[in-house]
Length: 445
Image (spheres, rainbow, N blue to C red):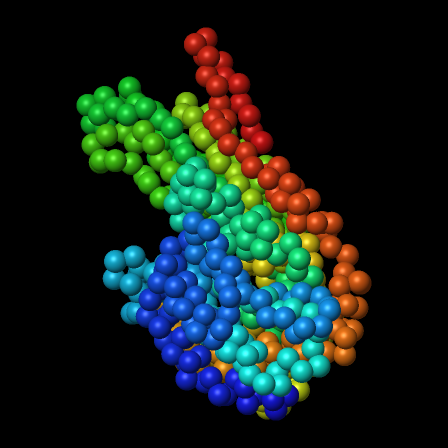
């Protein structure tokens, strides 16, 4: 492990400079132009040949040990969130890295730089693919829907999009490390998402002079939100369902009955079956509210991210790797399923994968007080940990990696099969057809 430590420490300043640059230049998903270029320039300066994502941000780069073996994927995420109240938020966009992805990128640079140092690849086999991936945070759904309409992306999440583009076709096993406000730890996984864009369609009229001639889309939307709240007690606890809509457009002017109201929402769940069942209930509630006020409703349902299944054998291996670094810190194995979501879940549905956490941050994740207070831990130590994991996976003819790969029972047999399934979750269109005789046909699900 000393070779790994020395190799990372040699590039300590580069790692810390990367963390600061990306913190100071936050960009949201599929808009990470400065971030991606900075990372690309850094990787090329280290001697890597890049495979860039055409038309969007992000790239991959391989390093070959020269010996036959599995391909290990190590990822870092480029995008930020939006939190205008944060003191370091971009004054125009509100973007800020109160997600810790800036530290991920810095650690990935540390991994890339160290792998070029003498002795680091000794005793390893196979390939290591390093990937700077866009758009992990599932936000700005309308913007991403517009990218879809333009043919620039097919999927909301960067990892899913990279899967679709073939970037991971020859990958056998994968991991990435997320910065945390806690110490070094791993959970059993996290929930998945169905992303929703909802449009209530009413009829405008003068709000004071002739409200009886209108049909209030805002009232229909608020009834829909109340109806969703009314079904929460029917959701089973083991499914870990989370539903949290927001209104993104509530009307055009105060003296007109709102004609169009837009909402965004997620339906999260521990399994695809639980998530799909809960989403049907949500759609019935939303649609029933529209029917009760004589408005219409258009619902766009799109797969967001899959449930994450952290590979148990990889959790154990990551603990071994961390302890081998002799940091004096403790690694925590947490036997819970988190109710956040990540597109790392998509990868875990087709290959063994791990998404653990390292310390170095403080404040509230996605909040206005989040910061990297210990970049040494969040970036430098994190890079050493990832290299230690890679070593344990690929040393001794990759015996550990091969065993994990052989034992993993993936929910889907291939990337192609997985993408076909999530494509089947897409649904859109008006849910009510009104007839002149006063009747209506309703599609609830």
